[in-house]
Length: 202
Length: 364
Image (cartoon, each protein chain N blue to C red):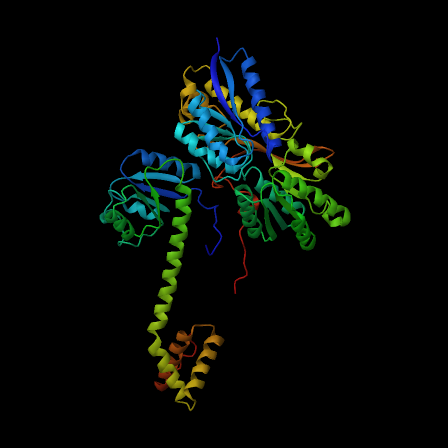
């Protein structure tokens, strides 16, 4: 774990159990209610209200992709698979759903709390990584802008190395990313050439 | 004509925490005697005892013996969380119930356990509130190396850091070890505002003795400026502590002589009181309902008697008085009585003031 586990914000959280009526649902409901969650069993389709749930437990044995009202593999909340059959095909499908943790069936007296914490941690980590990757992608996409900005600055008589260092200085002074600074330079020099003064922006 | 009902007792009569076991056993036996002598109750409880002698590996098998070889469905027992975790699979297998009468670290709500002593929202959180309000926010955390200490220290760290407090160190000793010199040296150099002592048995006795000495050498380490806090120390361990208990600040549901315990009786310690309450509540659930002795805990709690009882049917925890008290002259004296609080094992139903305080950060 990169961060300590926070335990105090599960109270009143909403959990859906997507499973046909079964003692496993009762046992899991008992555990989740004891922990302090509000529990709602659902079968066989998830309605739009599913989007308001904080956790989703789903049957990995009889489940199918059509049950989830979101693109396959990208659930908007932590998901816990209820695994009975360990047949490779079912495990493969479970992985495709994007489940963050699992509980083995039959569900008995314990296991739900660990599954909740593990699923939430995995979900949070997934979210953080996705945001980081998107940021890096955006910056990669700006490679051309950076090249353009450096060559514009270099065109004023500096070496490319000096121009690069100057751009870095500007980014630091403006407290923006290197790529955003490059976009600003490219924009401004273009504006100057077009005799527009838009220095007030930004 | 009284129905004869066997009840298991699973307490270690020797080993490092036998003072606590004996206190619990005393409370359970007192309640059994009281039930048996009560002409209004149609049941006669017969204790079936097994003694694991402080050996954690014997708890599971001996509990299995009680549930498998006698007619007992209910076992009152266990002191350490470690032994409780060993026993749970056995009571689950036999459909029995463990009545657990010792403060513990929470984050459990077994379908087969009733928890009649305090969990953290009834001991640690109010105790930290008291310490942070009256002494300061810099803490030294000392504990025995098993789940009780680990979880108490984790919670203490969570509460302290979210309240702008500081954990100066977090140290563990193996159960039974008296090697407290390193801890005492660290305490001396880090000069905390208070010490949370979650050591058990001989480790705790050695720590309290050495800390008492430290207080003689350096006035900072006296109860007025740097008290030792405990969620597991009760009067039953005074014989082993002697004068070294002076100034210890403890949280618990009962202290000797404090009135207001459900049922009104008086006890030597909260361990005794909680085990007594466990047996009394069990008797209440079984009385006047022939056949109830074979019912599962869930069924018992769903009965009319169950619904009228002190056990929360969702968590199997109990509502208990929350008291902060200081040891002086061989007795605990109440510092704060915070009324009755329902057990909240996952800390999801209530929040202490300290834990609820938002964390404010400078945004740059």
